[in-house]
Amino acid sequence: MIKHLVELTVPGATAAGFYDFMINPSDERYRQWWPEEHIQFHILKRGDDTHRGDVVFFDEKVGDRHRLTFRAVVAEADRPNRIVWQMVWCGVKLPAKVELWLDDTPGGLVLQHELRLGFRGIGKPLDWLIGLYFTKSFKTALETHCSIEWFKLRDML
Image (cartoon, helix red, strand yellow):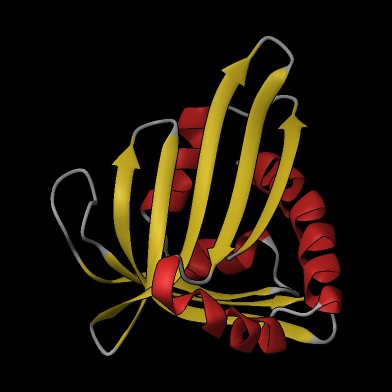
């Protein structure tokens, strides 16, 4: 399994502000956040009142050479601290999740952004296929992207 975790503190931001933005996305506000990198992020199908079960479409550039595009279902939604999106393809849940943890502290918002790709158990030998897509340059670009975008969101909100 491939795990990629970025953790940072964003002074002046709040868990509720970031959570509310991320759980109810629109393309217009997503592009406003970072016009050069963010392309689309919107709800395709609504789930329950907490947004669990929402199906979203997500598309962004990650640096000059990479792009992250997927459909996902909101697997977990715990306002204001945690959202988990599980990627889906043709209605089938994939072994790929994006998890966002948000925690208000005296020093600012502590944010953890984790991308988990791959299998456990019998499917683990197939992880090398994922490694063909999620290369070292992609990881580096994602770290750079994350270190910029959350401060931009704070400034926008």
